[in-house]
Length: 259
Image (cartoon, rainbow, N blue to C red; front, side, top):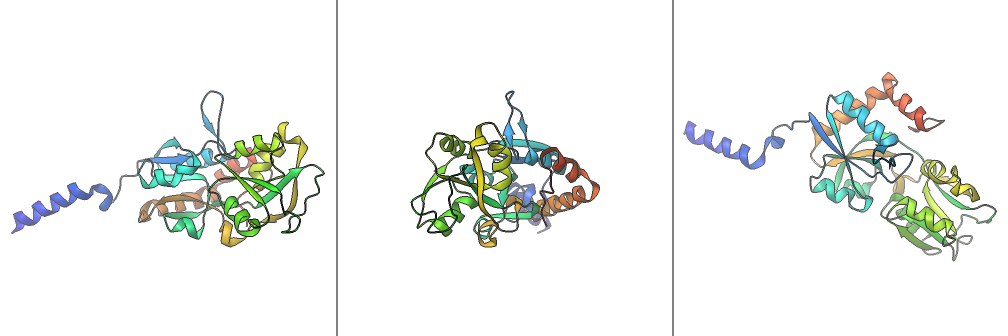
């Protein structure tokens, strides 16, 4: 009987793998987008850079893990996580109830509001009546897409893009009346650049919890409780020891973590 039990236990290990009894997190594969400056982008030499990238490396260092960054288009970033292409997503992904149906999240690691932008002097009013008939560009399958669809969808023509840069290009070509995106990403990645000099923010900040959640978190597969706890501990540690501020100050003149 003892021998039979041992065989069953060995077969169970073979079937379910180490993950069922405690995963080896000495190497963590992290999905990143690479098309969302200043949070993530790719240099001319093909290197990933940005706030998300530096935060990912800092968290891996804190956890004593080797960090492997895997670039993935935004549209497929959650499906690729579920397909085990990587173990976690660090890609400015807001923690929302809809996403929590598919993945688990850590605590937030930053929080910034959304905002509209327009050509300078366009005089748009950010109301249902003021936006009636306007064309708004957003990145597809994002919280900003959900927000403009839910709040202004009956008034505006929404054009959706695979990346934020594609939306910027259409804005510059005159095909869009407004853009909606994360205020920091749009300021740093467009408005503050030479190309975006003819555009400006308009209207209030938006951070409605039902669309934007508490901020951006790290997504992992459900039932990855150990990995969530490791990331949460590492986030708290870099916030306390000054490493977060050091990374923050490379990219921003304010505290991107928020309240």
